[in-house]
Image (cartoon, rainbow, N blue to C red; front, side, top):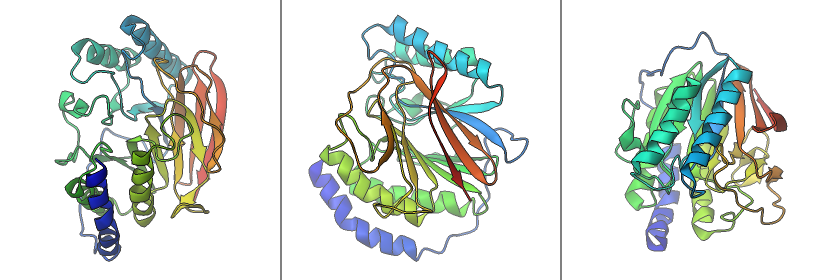
Length: 306
């Protein structure tokens, strides 16, 4: 992996130069569902990872409880976004059924992301729009562009593929009010993986790309804790940069302890309870509010304005 990352990073500077001068071609947007307007709400879950606790029945119950509480409390939820590791063991039919049943019981369409525990998860889902050969896909909804990236990919070709994917997605949605990236491996976290070399290398690769392509909000999982950064531009806090959210487990199947204070974190916490984030979208603002789902207490909120 290290060798592949060295190859990818060696090419990244050249890729960024090429992408910066890329003339975006015209393209038509493909929308998922129908939005009544540019104002809507969606849910974010970090790793449900059903089966991770060793008690699938308990994980299933926790997942269903979080989603049904959310939809009971907020009737305006358009869909659910999961930031990877939907299940603990790739290809496990019982875990997949438990995940799907939770979303179905809540009546929520969902948009999954490949994680390191379920890198082939998208193969189980039909009809994902604009899906490329690397496991990246995009869709537009209510004036927002969503770009799901397969952050399991670390080869030279896949990094180039990610750049190409971002070019095409942004080109096809020039007028999107918001650009939102979703991927699994949190590049700004505070728990077990926060200082891992592969995470730092992903940070090096992704952050300038997101700045180049005008990503407003990055939604991540992997580290089973909650973190919110200041807006970041080229690795520094900067107004108009990308805000990074690391989501905790939506099912309560597994948590990681925090590993100290991190300067990039405006908020970091581990409540050892299932959490979901409700994200409200308007033409002028994105508001992210994260809730502890057993008590429905709001743990953190922020607003990104334009």
